Structures are given as structure tokens and as C-alpha cells.
Length: 290
Picture 1: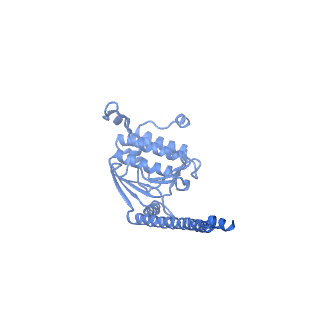
Picture 2: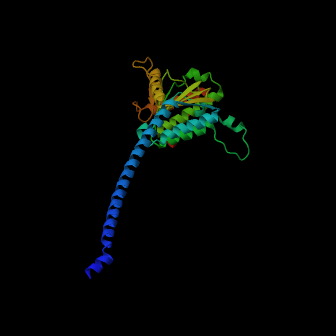
Picture 3: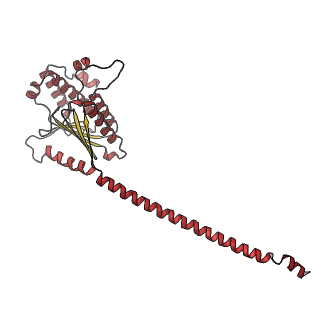
């Protein structure tokens, strides 16, 4: 009976042993394959990241700085708008800084008479370059952008000799500056002799990464995008307009300026310019309403 059992089922024992051995080898092989695959994937990711960093370094070193030319007041204003909004939307608040040197006339409100006589197509709504620019400035003010403007304000005889159109635009620009200074604690205007005047042939906007030189009184601009260049030009530009022992000290205007009466003094300056130009200034009621 036992011999019959062995004859009938004895082969199953070796088969079970062989199957168990094959199954064990398969499991071990599968685990080893999975482990090796994960290790290979990790190495591949590391190589990919390293190559990506190398490529990024090469691009940053070889393809920057980027230089762009913009023609026409509208194109210049649109590019200014982009630069200002990029800073305002920077996730790092400490990097939200813009420095202006001088001011092109695109920063002034359009003269009412020239605005009325300007030809526009029916049913086409267009924004003046000054409006594009000021909307960007207001956007920056709402987003904690630290703004400093270095400029040489006109002296009385200088504005007296200008055309009526220029006088009107300058006065409009001053009024908007006054509004900004009253509303935005992060904005300051620094009147310094060595800075460009309003409407000068060259005005400059500097951020952490960008240099924008506006020339031709807002008719063209060159934009350079490069961190190192921007840093160097920021340092040199500030040194050029300030000095340790200036003969004519800079005067700062703004809510955070040292002189608590600075805004009243700025308003007095505006009204003096308005009186010279025989144009409306800022009344006490206007100042309170604004």
C-alpha cells in the first residue's frame, strides 16, 4: 500500500520543493529589481537636477544680460508698467524695491487741451501713456513696494521760462506726486541738485534685476535685465546724486521723511509754481478731500 502511494504521489514532493525554490528566487529577484530600480531612478533624478542646474547656469552666464529697445511713448509706458508690476508681485516683500531717477513726461497727466484735440477712432478706448504709468505706480503702492524718486525740482526761474504746455504738465505731475506722498508711506521723493530734472532727456528706473533708461523724454527706452548689472548701476547711480558733505543737502518728502512738515512744504512749493504759471494750485479743501 505504501509502495503504491509512493508510486502514485511520490513525485509531488520534489515538485513542491522545486516550486517553492522557484517562488523564493522570484520573490528575492523581484525585491532586488525594485530596489535597484528605485536606486537607478534616484540617481537619474540627481543627474537630471545637476544637468538642469548646469544648463540654468550656462543660460544665465551666456545668454544674459537681455537687452530690449522700446520705441514710442505707448510702448515705453507699457514696458514701465510691466517692470513695476513684476516688482509689486514679487513673493519676497524685501525685494519689492524701485528707484527712479528723474521723470519722463509720460509720468505727467495729459494736458487737457491736447487731450481734447487728439484724434482717436470712434468706439476705441485708449489709455494715455501717463495713465498706464500711474496705474502701475498705484498698484505698486497697494503692494508694499518701497519706492524712492531722486529728482531735481524746477526752481522758480526755470519753470517761468517754460512753455505753457510744459508748465501745465509739470504742475499736474507735482499734484500727483503730492497725492502719492500723502497716501503711500513707502514712497519718498528726494529733491537733490545732482539728479535729473522732470522731463529731462534721460530718466532711469532701477529694480533688483532691471535697468530701464528712458530717453527722448519718454519716446524710447532701453531695458537691461541682469542682476549683477542692476546692482552695480544702483550703487553708482546713488553715489552720483548723493555725497557725504553736499553743498546743497537733499530734501526728502513723504510720510516717513525726517521733517514732519515736509508735506506742507511740498504743497507750498506746488502752489508757488502754480502761481508763477498762473494755473490752479492745491487749496486746503483739495488737500483734505484728497
